[in-house]
Length: 238
Image 1 (cartoon, rainbow, N blue to C red):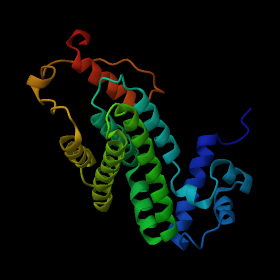
Image 2 (image 1 turned 180 degrees about the vertical axis):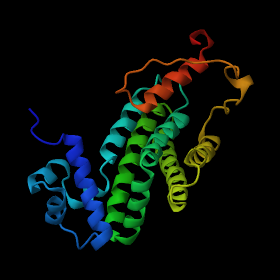
Image 3 (image 1 turned 180 degrees about the horizontal axis):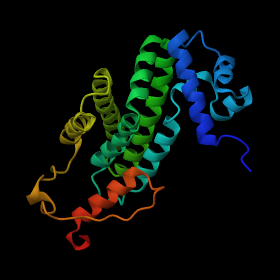
């Protein structure tokens, strides 16, 4: 027996209703009651998914932060910590790129509402804090470890945000992959102690190699990419 819409469907309906009203009336003029009325659910349903009205503007950051944390913890300890932190930041930009129209709408909305900009800064701080905690662990044996970790974490976040804003200001039309690649390359070239990995056939698998990856549908995209990169680094797996 079907008791109603699934949880993801209800959550998405609340987000869609909220943004329709925000764009029509403005954020400050829209109430939670307005949102649940348009979505056709009760107030209790809203607060089951979102602690406050501001949270409905950033519905995907908890998932993204959890994926970043899991990705950072998945390292073997042998990888370049700066590059690993940069790769973790890529996950966040990919999250925005998955829904370009929504991301651009959110960007334009947050530019107009000071309270949302402040909320967004608190979200950014959580990403930076997570990156810094990982880097402190990797630099624990260095006298300048804590300072280095905090500075690099801030650099990763700043470079990521530069790439993100460039893409958002284009209306989601520019090449976000190229933007984030350039931004993260700048960070690694500036802060990494390890030489850059050579690109092209000489630095990896030949051009005509084929890699087949078997993964669960529920596996996060970063884990699939990690599996491909691991195979390319080890010719025995190809």
